[in-house]
Image (cartoon, rainbow, N blue to C red; front, side, top):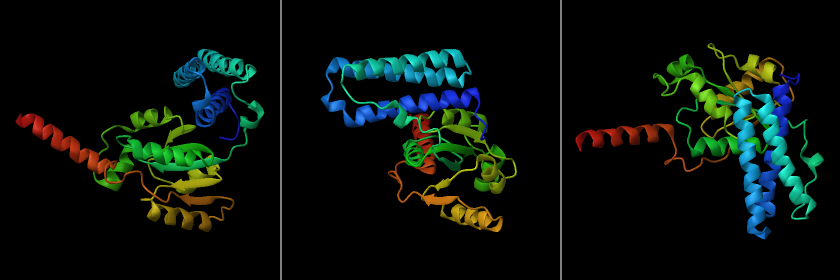
Length: 240
């Protein structure tokens, strides 16, 4: 995964523009005229199009969309609505952050987790295979592995999502991705300890293990809670 492909370079380009837009909205939004905000939002739409065509593997259209988004932002920069130093955002050496999970029924808690991981660097997500979910949870996932991977790849905080191995091999994944950080959710303490033991046993260094310190509204946004709500909803619908 170290050798950059055309897709990798395009993803980096999109990521830079995405981070610029996020910063504009965070630092300048309340000071911008309404017409200027609309242009920034238009740039965001072209960014979304670029991400869409990237996933469709239409490199040319994706590149055209993201270049147009950049052009709109530059036009505003030249008019001194905000300051952008594009080179400061072009962190091609941004560190790799590895996360993993099932991600069945993607909810705000998952998005919060991915955003927190993204703050540390470029996020690579290993998606649990269907067979792994059956072994861990004694049930099939609602969405199959490729559907879950596709949804995750569309999340703005995810750089690359890929399927894990049928037989989970943590060390093989670490050696392939070469992350500087492995990021865990608050409910993955047991997994983190297993990963720690494995990387120490294999003499792997320069990998930092980081765990998220809190949940995002745990009781409301939890996969099992959502499943129970679905069950209750359809039960009531059948009785009505």
